[in-house]
Image (cartoon, rainbow, N blue to C red; front, side):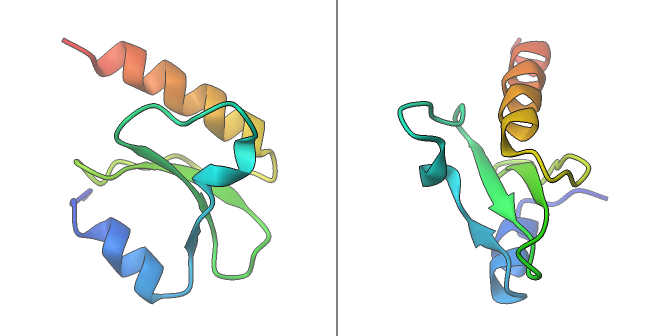
Length: 75
């Protein structure tokens, strides 16, 4: 089950927040672009809720997924 503390847990386990690597594009708030500990796959994560995406090699798919998820969950 998703939990807001998952973000900190992932960082402690070796994942990295690489939201800065999208050039002029930015992840929507409060989403982060995460790189797994093996540095092979990306996933997005909502830092407030702990909800995360499936892993993928495509950081732009994560970006689009986070934008879509943010749009779908905005009240």
